[in-house]
Amino acid sequence: MSGLALDLDRLTAIDVHTHAEISKDGHGALSPELFGASETYFKAHGHRQPTIEEMAAHYRERRMAAVVFTVDAEHATGHPRISNEEVAESCAAHPDALIPFASIDPHKGRAGVREARKLVTEYGVRGFKFHPSIQAFSPDDRLAYPLYEAIEELGVPALFHTGQTGIGAGVPGGGGIRLKYSDPMLVDDVAVDFPELRIILAHPSFPWQDEALAVATHKPYVYIDLSGWSPKYFPPQLVRYTNSLLKEKVLFGSDYPVITPDRWLADFAKLDIKPEVRPKVLKENAARLLGLLR
Image (tube, rainbow, N blue to C red; front, top):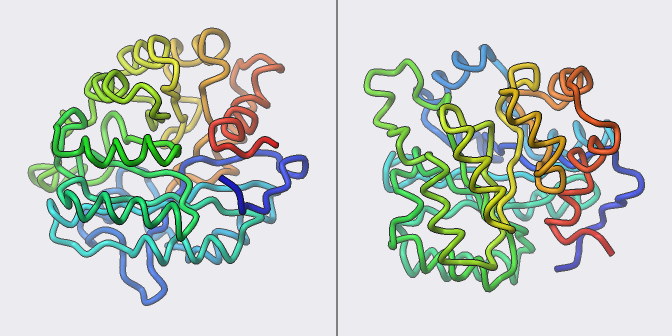
């Protein structure tokens, strides 16, 4: 894939996990109830929902690039998504700072497959985000397999939320969100059945951290991003594997805007990570995975 104007030498980091929470016309990616639960979970009450243009400025000022996506969960929530085309076009206006991903509800079937192909070939989308708990599907459900097949053929990564989620936390019944769908072991079947698909397991996968580490060490194209947690709370085994077996496969991610890159990086600087591993986590691993290296 080509077309990005990222100057890797200039960049200090690539954040592989940021959210477009609001559209140009003010439409939120999730309902106010679910957003409110997330704010409470992350202690981010009243945080601004930046526009994509504001996100570009935020990362440009820090000499960073950011992967940007929304979540399409229309089938389960009934809440209309932010347009993938809007996300892609807004990112394309800031190619020095932003990298567009898309999100397609697997329940959309063949229409979703057609959309995925169009988004990559015509809009320059560089990957796809899945949130099984919010989208109400198990990653190993065959309903999603045609979509995975298309993504594998297109040669771009699939990023899966794993572990507990702040979305719906504290709402009666968790807002209908089932945590079981975000067990990383469910993604192991996907890695087996689509052996060339690049997969990112997003977040320290509480309460399944060991399972995520097992999948990432066993499957050569499975990576882990470190978003959604301050590094000071990382489980010790995650730090140990980052420094050793997975040093080429762990990626910096913040979960902006609920966690800022400034906060994440300040805490990461205090973590016991080998000096030669830090640049891999912060930039080099993501650059290789996203096909940014010349």
